[in-house]
Image 1 (cartoon, helix red, strand yellow):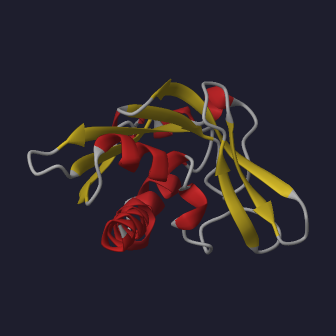
Image 2 (cartoon, one colour):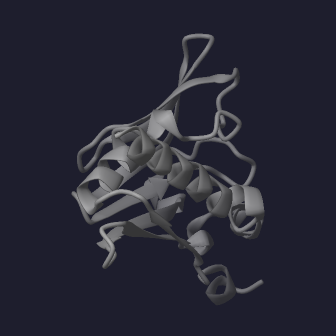
Length: 164
């Protein structure tokens, strides 16, 4: 596979029952309420998912054994419309400390005519990964990859809307 083929992004979109500001807040500050507990790279089960809500903020999980496991860095912080994160996970599902060797994920939040929010996710730059870029691209494009993760997010937004 050539580097240009690896740079074909994975794109997923979903519309959620929330306004733009609420959807952005739920995706970022509220990530722990909807992120699947099975999706982590820590050495023990995940206790909590965290995005530090600022440019340069860490994306990490706290594990039940008390450790923390970094998995990304916030590159662009433009609430409530846009977030870009370095996806610092290797093709072997380990932490990659070098941002220049990481793929990235951009999430855009756009108001829909009915007051809901369209969420567009693009995972790109797999060719930056020294090894495993194709494996990573394939995994995040699977039904339990970004599509499934966004379903969890939409379900949480719907539950919040129903409780309001």
